[in-house]
Image (cartoon, rainbow, N blue to C red; front, side):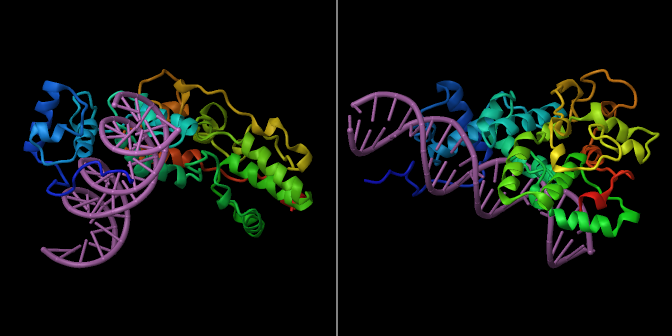
Length: 295
DNA sequence: AAAAGGTTCAACCGCGGGTGC
DNA sequence: TGCACCCGCGGTTGAACCTTT
């Protein structure tokens, strides 16, 4: 015997709710409390199925729902939690008072996910997108355009590229698989990539910026990337510090002038956020890198 | 001014876990 | 133990709205 439908579809209304329906639902729930969604529509005089009523109540009519823009803090919380629990919207919503899972899911799909993709971060794994890293094409084009190199890649992404390139040149297939697994384990998370203002981002955002300063601080100048140098020093994972994070709510924490946090705290629009995040993921190839040595 | 394309988000759908009989 | 039902979750849809050409 198959599962019976949640409600009799015949004669039941679908689509947007009217003010009158909202009123009926709110009055009923205020009197009897939420629950018993199957019998609620009939008792409340609504031509809707229970599911539709529950959804309308939990996502829209509930009195404790917070409407309006997501704050930087909320956005940051969503990214952090998503990196841990994935698409568990209800779990994320539980940590954001007044926000519904549906609202968070929509916000993720329409705003955050796109921004991560634009910044070269896989929104599922929260790591740099390896599918975008066609190493040979990146490095070949780098070689061809060495004199006019303004590649815009996150330093972590470049490290990956150079590591993979050097590994490809010398490693067996098994070694390559091992290397890939190791790197997946050691890659910094999305939040960490967006949260490195205490390391390289300050340099990138400072007014006296120059090419030499753009060398990622965890890599020595003129360093040649070789398989033997795959070590923790290249994957220094910064300690999570919410107060310094990229997406902190304005005025959330006092920070020094010229810091990235100060910059972010001045962000008030989506454009500001986008500009900031884009800046975070830009850098130039340092002059000292010897491409020939690992090609 | 109008058409086309893009974006947003409320609402729907199907599935699965939990529970009671 | 198995079935029916309730409820909640995550994925998807489509209408409304906005932006671009």
